[in-house]
Image 1 (tube, rainbow, N blue to C red):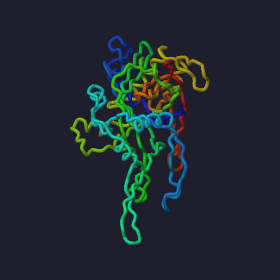
Image 2 (image 1 turned 45 degrees about the vertical axis):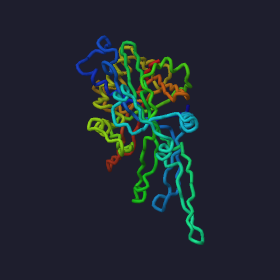
Image 3 (image 1 turned 90 degrees about the vertical axis):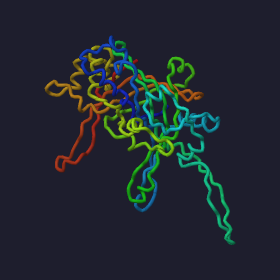
Image 4 (image 1 turned 30 degrees about the horizontal axis):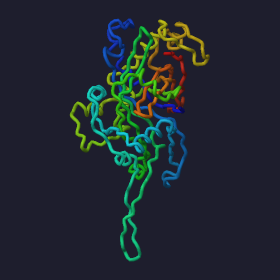
Length: 370
């Protein structure tokens, strides 16, 4: 499956903070899951790879960018199941936490007409006027454009066992994301895109071993997670009409940060992952020399400054390589993490003006989880 994410999954590992405080040694004697004693529930956005081209919109925007998201391997069977077979999916306007959804599930479904409406598609009515002034209603159907599905919004539970060198994630639910230009902003001379959740596929707690036996496999799905922080409301739109939320659920959404779990500290996550490589629980390969396993000294040299201090502040992204299992019958997704690449960022600025020029990204090592 040719899917490469620009943004994705490390948000999930936020809960490592609860493990790292007060613990200098990595051990699972007290906790089977190093992320939390029980469950580590997360939210994050996965973006599909895309092709872009300029189109004329107006004199103000003669070359407005349009994107064709390369998602058909997954999105086509997903929508075929819903539109052609009538498979029921849930309302995307969920206001609570992942934990509450996993425990209680959802009983609120959405019909296909509302899904089409969210995608600016479906049936509408226009009117024609003849020479005698008679007005005739004319039904018009606009088909949905699946290439505007920019990504998936995942609710998951993560599990890390340091002693076994094992990291896994269980999909609780996912929401396709529809991307579109903000027409009002364009009319005001500004370029802005909006994203909308169009429905939820609720999976609940499943047994991944049983699910893999009946699933198609997409190998080598790659996704880079950039460590920055923006609220979900900046990206994702939901309808509040008829879905009044309590204060707790509202805050869960409004203040839950993009690409981060609540209280996530990237330094603690990186420290645990790098330490696992240093003590040999994970193997760290040289990305420039496939198959070469780095020694602890070589790993430290890549993440340390001239004073031999480990620098986490410039390790600003990681890239995951995963295998995805998709069940076209139940629409469930199961994932297996193959590796994590730690990436160093260096920022270049104009020496005269001080203006930012570019970001240079250097993959330091690939931590294998196979």
